Image (spheres, rainbow, N blue to C red):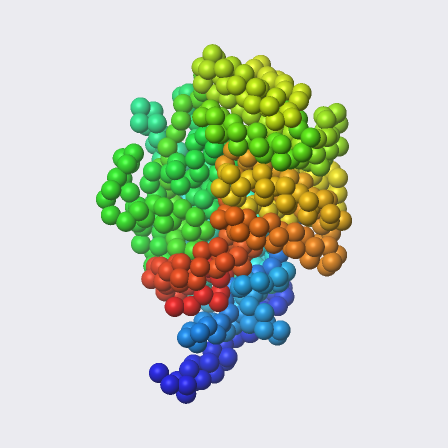
Length: 572
């Protein structure tokens, strides 16, 4: 095809609509308004939100906003073509390679009245156009990312069939949809940069089946992992993944999360047997049987896990369960440097001991815990372990690790077997993030999520720590040291552009350092909008083009959580 053909295509793209740069006033929706206040939002949702907000003092301090986005065009060597809408005035590809844009941009078109009527018929009173509700759903609760638009409608489906009907209607009208669960993700996964329909899945939270002898459970996506474990405890079972409090099973599947127990039990991809997913055309797909293993066809389950709502909406999850351990020991010890601590984590894994947790906190993080909780812990790099099994086996593991610690400059090795003492020790780690805000209560946090092969962990943390300590910003290190994954909480003033750019620089330094060690930009938090810019360097253009082809095949109208995961400059 000649140059004139491509020139005509470019001119056609250039005529597409421009950004909507501000949140639209709720009065714009008056002609649709049959739900105008929170009284029309499901009461269970409001009650749960009120309880959660009153319980967590830190929720108001958690981050809002970052950079990146959806849809742009790119000239590659073959002059391949993508959407031109999201090319800003300085020719920066929003969300593309090297983008440092703070607000996620997106196109917007008015939601047709016909779709509003169809959604009303499907959801009845379980939907809202109220501005406050839409704003709440368009602003991530645990993330500093933000977008120029918010959802036009929020729906609360009660069944798989309702989800199918909602998605089918949105696809017919080519209106974007954004699945929404516990809103604990931190990379802008639930932003609505192009407006559209937010599908809040929290009313679908039942345990549909529990097979005790098979050690599996079939659940709806809106149930939280903590609520599920409360349900399972009387049966002597538990689900072993433990991300942030409030995370739901559907969202955990979407982001392919893990947590502190991943070193023993694996990540979400290892603990999901089967899914049911609503595709963009409304079809309901079962990805696998309930058998523990299968070689039947493409592995659609793993395709959907980690797809972040860009390929379908998860409506049912079959989970692999574990027996509650007979006995456990929690241990803690100190080190002069983070490298010493990381070396012990590596040595422990190489020893063959099957630890269930190995967590590392640097001295800044321990100081934050002391300030937040009134403790007097030694403010030095600290490792925490959990050993499980029989009483004899757990104690044997503890003694072996104690010897390893003593050989690597470790000190103050303490351990607990009493349930209350263990709970108190582990509380130190579980509340680490909230403790950070005690040091800088008016700041927000940029949280890194790099992961490297275990042999590179000590070097990565050492190099990162030198850069972090040299910065004027307060930065803490929290690592899942047993599998090479570590987070840095970088506190910055969101009103100070210089501080935001410094936080971004530090985050980028750690990502590029991890990638140079054959690591990844995200070990468990997912891509969303915040990590898109690193994917080409990590995976290569060919891999991203393959993802784009899959996305286009399953979602030709690009309604499924647009502007996430796949960088906008990727074409095929």
